Length: 277
Image 1 (spheres, rainbow, N blue to C red):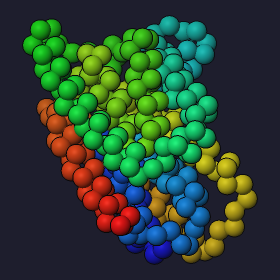
Image 2: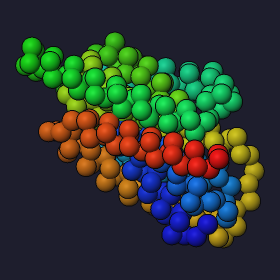
Image 3: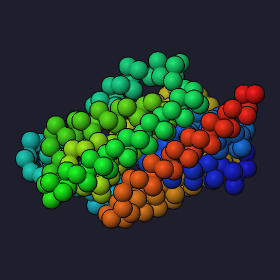
């Protein structure tokens, strides 16, 4: 794999990790065209997670600092809005962490299928459309939606359950969590911000988990170049994706992403049909 190809894969990962369009679906197509050669694929995936982690930490730096301060206050039982937010995020992390630990092998054996990705892309697209319809009706009735600071313990946990569903390839962690937040009466932008904050422990855990599964690995100088290019691509693209999505959701809806998911599901299905024939 060339440095350019590695950077391209990192960019794809960075964009699709945070936009609600499924990183798995796009990487299936990308890796049909860009094979991994100079480095172990699992190692590349783990290191690219470092890039996406850098992206979310820098793009949401004020919120991250606030949560870290709140976490310290929460540990020392100081009650304030920041400690409450940190506690809600910790609670929301539990479902995906437990599901990942318990169901990882089952998911790897039974759900790591390109056709599962196609179905998930389409189903979640339909969920987006239904959520948007419901959201508009609810907003007309209530006239107001909640912000990040108003996420309750129960809402945080339910959004964490939604994040756990994203273990199914093709669902999109950001997409399903944002949709859940909207169903729980958060604004689109607030749902996205909370979803990104909620993803930080999971992204970190996924990267560490992949590294521990690898054990000792010898990396060639060419391999290091590939890894660094992938990390930089993921970090830069992820940062821009987060900023652009938050700006878009301030006034836009999930509908364009739903239509895009349906289109990419169709493309992958056609490619698989041709390859399998």
